[in-house]
Length: 154
Length: 298
Image (cartoon, rainbow over all chains, first blue to last red; front, side, top):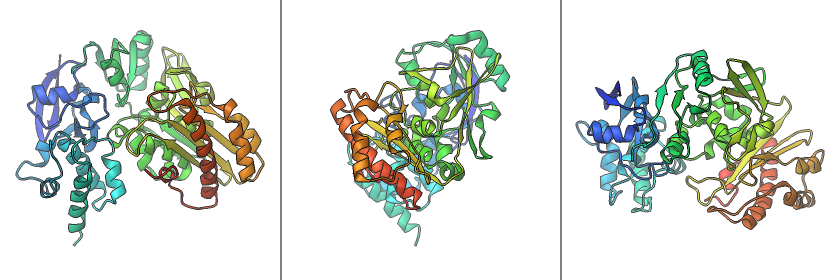
């Protein structure tokens, strides 16, 4: 067991982990952060996406011990006081049905919008090409992001 | 699912410390960078290391630079860094193309080029530019440095020329001085994340010299030397390309798997070779080419 400390959603947290524990399990089972979801467990589906030092990564393929002295952000961390504009847009456009993929997609797009506040449809598609949604067919997701980023340009 | 296999984890702060660990543990220690292959393989019981040596705190392994016509990529440099670095795109557009096709955004944030070639799967997108640019893989151990030409690197599926006490420190590519252009075409089953059904890297220069490499079409990624020899010195024409396509039978050895049949791989390789050659020529002539749109634009 190793005691590690890292910033989780802007809060310093400490937890004891074994080297073979993956970040996803530690977030969900030891730290009570339930938004990252366990889907394929091999990096294909994107449901476990979190931001590691601002970059969207697969938390099922990151060892928890690696998080030491780094920053992890989950959906809980981007909606502390109120939902982000992106989350509001997703609600408005009914962008999710079952919602299992939603935290991963929201984080992947949050990263995209930081680098490209006005992304093209191609950039949006590329940013979430590794986040599988089996309900919506993606169209309402693209619509929400396009509408939000157009609005901001007014 | 937790990882059932137990192992130790070390995060050495210097290259020397990493080499000492690798030297004492040999095959029971694995080098850990992005982990996007390694963690999956450990979860699935394919690998059972005693120790993971995380190399991400070693500063020199993050080096990415273009010096005197040599592009140097440290072992801890991720695909995302390659994609986001302007001089990589300017110096070696084929590598930039290939980096963009690796898995998905969330995997590319962590996965490294060095890790990719150490995994050495047959469908290795990034191998084609390395083969076309005669890249050199720099390996280091307590015994010293070995610089291994990429052509000697891939021995068999998942098997490379690295020794059990070595780690890859970086990869370098010589960027030719003359006017030249390259392109990487990847065919997957759909536009999103997928491994290659077939991949073709094509390079040419203004002296009509050609370098061509493929992946997912043989046990290891390979140069297509017979096709290069046919094309060298010649202007592209429909007849010449037909003759080149006829050589595919001896150049590639595709198999049937979950992603496609060998007959389809054989057929589509002809289509990709033709479109890739014209696309590389277009880039040489200064035209803008989007490789993802050349195969149906899905």
